[in-house]
Every structure is written in structure tokens, then in C-alpha cells.
Length: 450
Image 1 (cartoon, helix red, strand yellow):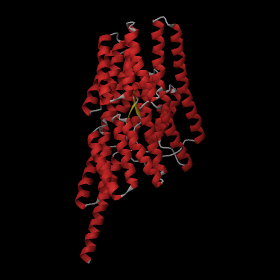
Image 2: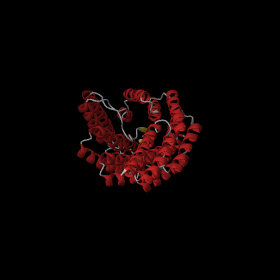
Image 3: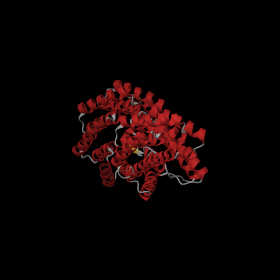
Image 4: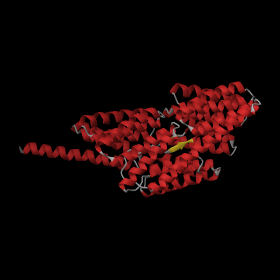
């Protein structure tokens, strides 16, 4: 009997060692993602030897988060699936929801938003079955991002407001991720000062909790906002500061997006050699990490850059390469933007027939996605197209549509602003694998964080 008791004590002490390693991995991830992955692997090995299933599932989850942060998406999915299988076998629904959310975040990072939404939906269903309102706020925020990136701003806002409502009912402090996401909505709709207010609030909170990785994403958000405000000195300053942190902690995907945004800054400043350098660097690294959606988006950006340079042959080639890539991976929103860019290109040569063909394709997809921002641009180009053809009546019809879509966008954000004020901003604390809130150019791609 004594021997048995001694063995049980040894096992219990060993289990506690695994738990301690998992805790260390969690803490290390805020400042040193590579260390976090190394500690997680150590925890996996020890838990496997001990047959400690709960500790093993947590170690797999930690390893998956680290892999996603370093843009090793395939490895992240493998680790998450292992964790999910164990959690379901143990009937640990709380751990299952954290893993479902984490899996959704990977597909979100890969720009497979429909797949991401499926996992978020499944996660919310399980959360509601156990009454975990606190974590539901996180998943609603994440799902909102996926809808937003897929062009459905209305659905995104509904998710954010539902999250805010739960925060209010719990009378708790809002997590900085939601401040970032609301900032992105205002950035998307051109309300730059309000966008900066949200990002500044998020920045202060990431600094207060000393989460330097999330701080870098928020700095990048601020830098991107300054691009749209045409304050390029501030844009480059904030983006460069974000880059220093990202390089130190090894987030390759976020690094690539900063390169792309620096390219955007220099393009707007008409410093085209610098812009080309940064875009090409982003393109090279996106290919290396296998971020296909960002590859096709950067090709689209290069098409726009060469259009500005009046090198229409190169512009068309980049657009066509990007279109082929987008269609292959079913990146609907980039197909919309490339067709819009090609329409502008053909209008330059007064080829209204081909321009109309590209616009028709873009309009159909943008309507299906409920992307009012893209529809407003498309209608403006339609108007220009009919003006060139001498059909001023149709030109006026589409110009009116352009303004109606802009009004819809404004109404959405005004409604969000009023409801957000009424709800009062509120919640934070321990959120596992909160995603994604760093915008990438026009693509609306957000880089996930922990």
C-alpha cells in the first residue's frame, strides 16, 4: 500500500511539473514566442511519458499558438487537432472551446474566412451550452473580424456589439482586442480620428499588461491609419517601431504586412523605388511562409503601383497574375479588387466594353459579400465608364449609387457609435488565443495574435 501511495505522489508531482511548464509557455509567449514553443515541446514530451492527457492537450494548444504566431500554419493545425481530439475524449468542453477558437484563428490567418466562421460558430454553440459568457465575448470579436475581412461589415458590427453587450451585462472591463477591432471599422469607413482614439486606447492597455507582441500589432494599426491620413512621417515612424518588435519576437506574417504597408506609404509619397523594394520584400516572404492570400493581394498592390507609374503593361501583368492566384485559392475579395483595378486600367485606353465586363464581375461578387466599400468604388468607375461613352444619364445613376453606398457605410458606423456609447466600453482578463486585428492594406487581412 505504501508503494502505491508513493507512486501516486510521484505521478502527482510529475503532473504538476507539466502544469508548470504549460504555465511558463503561456507567460513566455508575451515576450519570447520561440521560448514558448520550446517549453511547450518539453511539456508535450513529459506529458506523453506520464500519460497525463489534460496536460498534454494544454501543451499541444500552446505549441499550436506559437506555431501560428511564427506563421507555421500547417504545424499549428496539427497541434490544435491533437489538442481537440484529447479534449473531446476527456469531455472537457471548456478546453474544447479554446481549441475550436484557436483552429478558427489559423484558418482566419490563412484568409479562409468561411472555414474560420464555421469553427467560431461551433465554438459559440459549445460555449452557450456551458454558459461561458466571458470567453464568448472573445469568440464573437474573432468572428466579427472574419465577417469584416470577408466584406460583410454589417455582420462584423453585429458581432462586436453583441460582444460589447455581454461585457456590459457582466459589468467588466473590455479587452483591448475589441478596441482594436472597433478602430479598424472606423479606419475602414474613413473615420480616422475616431480610429486613432480606439487604437490609442488599445495601445495603452497592451503596454499596461506588458504584452509587447500585441503592442506591435496596435502600433502597426496606428501606422496604417496615418497612411490614410496622408501623414507619412508618422506612418513610417509607427510602422518602423512595430517592425522592431516583430523582428525581435519572430512574427513573420506581421513583419511581411509591415513591409507591405511601408510600400504603401512610399507609393503614396511617390517614392516609387522604395515602394517597389518593400512590396517585393513582402511578396518574397509571403511566398516563403505560404500565405497565399497575401501573395495575391500584394500582386494586386503592385498592379496599382505600376498603374501609377504609367507602366500599363507591367500593371496588367501583376493584376492578371494576382487574379489567377486569387481564383485558384477562392479569395473572393481580392478577385473583386483586381477586377476593379483592371476596369480602371482598360478605361485608361477607353476600352469601355472590357471595363464593363470586369466591373460586372466585381459588382456581382461584392454584392454577394455585402461589401459596401467595394461597391461604392465600383459604382464610381461605372459612372466614369458611362461618361466616357457619352451616356450621362447612366453615369448619373451610378454616381447616385456610389453616394448611397457611402451613406450605408456611414449609417453602419453611426449606429455602431451610438450603441457602443449606450453600452459603455467594458472587459479584459485572461483570454486564450485572442486573434487578429492588424490590417493589411486594402486586402483587409488581419494578422492574428495570441
